[in-house]
Structures are given as structure tokens and as C-alpha cells.
Length: 246
Image 1 (cartoon, rainbow, N blue to C red):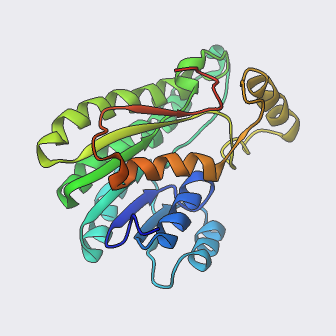
Image 2 (image 1 turned 90 degrees about the vertical axis):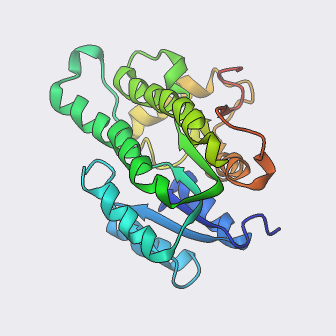
């Protein structure tokens, strides 16, 4: 397949999980990919997985200056036919455990980060480009431990709806990926026992009865990034095994 031949796609948070799976598939389908990440080990490993010369950049979405630095790096390569704002930060906690530092840290990475990234990268989006944002089924689950994280991912949905309207005159589409329980490193901040218990509680509600793979989630993101979804904008696509049934 060559859906991405001649297209350059930027994926933030592209050195692991869904983002990395998507980057590898875009490259396999003839596209040029730029990815960002934070962990030096994953950055180095990703450079070995993508075609030689693929930009693999250290960029922290939570840093207010990072969006302009990212735009400068992209500008050096050219324009973008696709943008997947996938980077994010997660932490769980009861409502009583949230403090100002935790709030600011998660809002900076999950809300301010993509907001500033789109603001700086918008001039580099080609006519007819596609933008995908990663939200989460946590937005709709109402789980006791995810209030702050779910709030940030709900903000992603609201942002995307407005961007879909704002960018439509340029033929640019904006859609949201809503992953459910996907096997990535995203919950590895939890101790093993807590992570296993959390995942069992969620998977127990999934009609398909299993966790999804990073490749399955990336496949839907790539559909939205590709010309195959040319008449889709302002939409949410759940990849959750039927968890939300939406």
C-alpha cells in the first residue's frame, strides 16, 4: 500500500505504543515520518526502527517553548500532510489526592501542549492535511481514579471540534482517536499489581474481552490521517473493544 507516499506526517509521542506503531506503518506505506519523544533510550531505539534520516526529536509538550522549537524543526523539513498529536501524561488518584502541582503538570502536557503545538504548526499544514488528536475512553468512563486525566482528555475532544470548524476552509480535517484499554506503556507508571488490577477491572467491561494492541489503535489513526477518510472531520473514533458502545 502507498497511502502515505509523498506525505510527511508528524507524530508527537511517537517513540512507543500507538505512536511508534503508526510511525512504522506510515514509513512502510511510503510516507515520511517525524516523531517526538522524551526518553533518550526510546529515542535511540526508534531511530533504529525508522528509515535512515527520519527526524526523531526530543520534545516535551509540557514545556511552553517546545511548540515553537518543534515548528522550527518541522519547517526545516518542509510542510506537513498529517499531524497526530499523541503525546500525553497520565496519573491516577482519588479526588482528595489532587493538588495544584499535579493539576498543572497534567494540564501542561495534555491540554496546553497540543493547543500550542497546533497554533505553531498550523501554518505548516498543507491544504487537505489531516490532524488527529489522541483522547481516551477515560473521558466517558467516570472511573473514580481518573478525574484529572479524564478532564484533560475531554478538553482534547472540545479542542478538536473547534479546530475542525476553524481549519475546514483550508480543507484540513480534524478528528479524535479515543483509545480504550490498549496494551502500551502508558500505564507503566503504576506498580505491576495495581496496573493488572486496573486493567482487569476495565477489560471485564469490554465486550470483546481483551486489551487492544497498539497496532490496532494505530490502524484507526492512520485511516483518519490518510486520504481514505477524506470526508470525515469533527468526529471521534473509539478503539475500545466496545467498552463505550458509542
